[in-house]
Structure formats: structure tokens, C-alpha cells
Image (cartoon, one colour):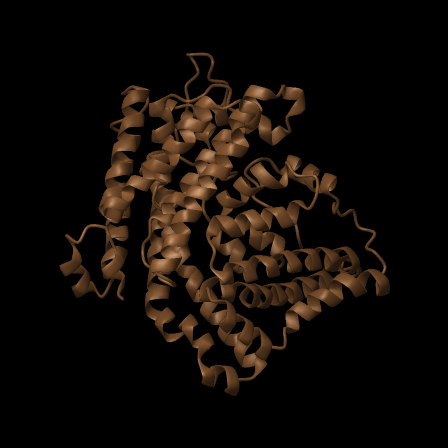
Length: 496
């Protein structure tokens, strides 16, 4: 069955899709994002907060978010309103002391039903699907619920520094809530925008909060232009598109199930192919996420600060840091750089709020949020193991290499190589999706890195003295590090 057989979105450009070599759903996604990029300019200029009311800005983002959803998903777009509608009923009717947990549960159940429906009726499809935007909406409604819970039930003394930043003290109106969940700049591919940041954007307070105290009307706020950042991100997105379109067909992930590949290649050949194929798959995500970041920036969302050279930094709200991920020397850096908003969301509602097994529970929620393909669970289970193993290696080994610049460089080179082998080794089931083909490949590779991780976990504490460097490895230490890093440092695993 082809993608078009299950695709419910608009077919108006199906003829053009045939001439471009793209599937209709892929072309619709690109068109919707290009239109959104143009609309973002209107959002930032014609509908600037100084020129129009907040109600108009709310309505503009909401209406075009719904229209884009209908264009890309057809009748399925009803779920874009359905999930937040159900959660809004919970928010306005339930006790704030329990409301946040109920919203998270309801949103995950709704999302899970659609994940299962797709898995049953369109197994293994990589076509454009409504579950993608709903994953972002789930993050928005649940983060808002937890922020409301903090704002309505806790005193400032009971909140962490991050909870104080995200806390919401008033239940949003109908228009505020739905425009927040369905605003067109982020409805298709994120990034996750937290409620206070959204309201600051709508009311025009984003820049002044960063630059100065805007309570005084006479203060003049210098609004930076996002054009340069938008141009860079659009060019980067196009580059990523060229990479995966040109090279991904040469290294299909499906080859990992091929009998000849399994039986007639060495372990080193398998590692090489895993690394190349999973890297090329990432460029699809880079394209979608980077163009989405550009749309948000062009709307006026995401200004972080002025750099030392006077240029403006527009990475406050972002999906991914490509350079940091691809050149990371440890898993901590990789986790921080990949799907950054999701990392903040996971830390906000799970990692900082659980006293027992925070890392395991964080990975568990991430797995359920993604869906129910067995490959997801192999990846997240493996991710938890390698997270603990990486912490142990850092704790017992790293300090031995800190004596000179040369030895530190050697350590960084070794960890860079190991990290990227581990990433390809642990993430290919996420892309392959299937259980037994993934297990079979692991069997052919003798579960080598799993065994190495196990040896590191159980042997290093015995045979290697613990590093004397000041490492924060306890839950309290990690929380302190997060507190110092601030809410937009997206580390969850804290593993080096």
C-alpha cells in the first residue's frame, strides 16, 4: 500500500509531486512550511504588538495553524483540536493539585490511540502523519498543566528556580489556550514553545524582558532583526535536504534486514554502515526542525541575547543544535543537542519531580510519547544502559586524562569516536522500528557494546579508583547543575 493510499491531506499538488519525485505528503509539508515562513513575516511586522491587539495576534496564529493542519492532514486535522480540547476540559474542571497528572495521562492516552491506529493500519510508514503534530501538542498542554499546578498550588519558596520561570498563575482563556497549542509557526514540527514565552511573544515583551526593565514606558527597546538568523537556517535546511535526498537512497536502513548483509559483512563493516545510514536519516530531522526554527524566528520568537560581537542570538527556542550533536564528545552533549525542547519538557515534568529512578522514568516517558514500535523500546532501554555506563566511565576514568592538554585531547578524540559508534549502535532500532530484525543484527554483532557497557558498570568501580574531580553524580548534584544552567539548558541524561 503506498503512502498516498493512506494519506488524507490535500491532493491538489499531487501532479506537481509526480514531476518533482516527491510524495504528495512530503510536498505538502514543504509547501506548508514555505507558506508559514511568509506568514511569519506578517506576524512580525504587520501584526506587530504595537500595531494590533493581542486577540488579533492570537486569532491569526490559530486560524492559520488550523488551515495548515487541514491542508496537510485533511479530516484527521480534527485531532489537532480534539486532544487540546479534552485536556482543556480537565484543566478548567479539576483540582489544580491533581490536574497536571490527569492532563498528562489524558494527552498520552489520546496520543497513544493514534500511535496504535497508525501502527496497526499503516505499519512502518514514514509518511506525514497527524501523530507528529500531536506529539508537540501533548508537550504543550502537559507543560502548561504542570506550570499551572506550580503557579496555583505552590509558594515561591516551594518551587525550584526553573519552576518559578515556567509557573503560570492564571488559567488561560479559550482563545489564549487554543492559539498557544495550534499556532502555525510550530504546529507542524515544533519547536516546543512554553506558555510564558508564547504570551511574552504575543504581548511584545520578549525583547524587553531580556534587555531591560520594561515596566517604565519611557524605556526604548531595541528589537533585533531575525533576518540574518532566518537566512542561515533556511540555507542550512536546504543543505540538509540535499544531503538526505541525494545520499540516503544509497544507504537505506532496510539493508540492515538483508540476509546477505547480515551473513557476509564483518562487525566493522556493520558499524560503518550503521554509522553512515543513521547519520543520513538524521538529516531528514535536521531539515524539518531547522526550517521550523526559521519560521519561529521570522515570527519574532526565539531571541535569546546579543552576542559579544553585537549580533543577535535566536536560539532560545530551538529543535536541534546540529553542530553540537554531530561533533559531541559524550552522550551528555548529544542528548542536550537533539530535540532540545523535548529534553526540557522531559526534565520539567519528570526528571526534576521524581525522587527515585529519574533517568529510567524519563526514558520510559520518552518511549511512550514516541509510540509503540518495538524498536523505540530497544533504543530507549539501550539509551538508559549507556547513560549509566557513560556516567561510570567519566567518574572513574576521565580524571586520569586531565593532567595535560595532550592527554585531554586524546580522551576527547576517543570519546568522540566511541560516542558516535554508540549512537549508531543504539539508535538504529528506532529507525528500523522492528523487534526481531534489530535483535538479529545485535546477535550478529554479539551485543558487543552492550557487554562493554555492562563491564563498565560493574567492573570499573572495582578495578579503577574513583575520580577525585568534582563531578555531580547524585540527584541533588544534577539538580544543582540544572539550576545553574537555567531552563533552556536541555540536558536530561547528564552522562559524559
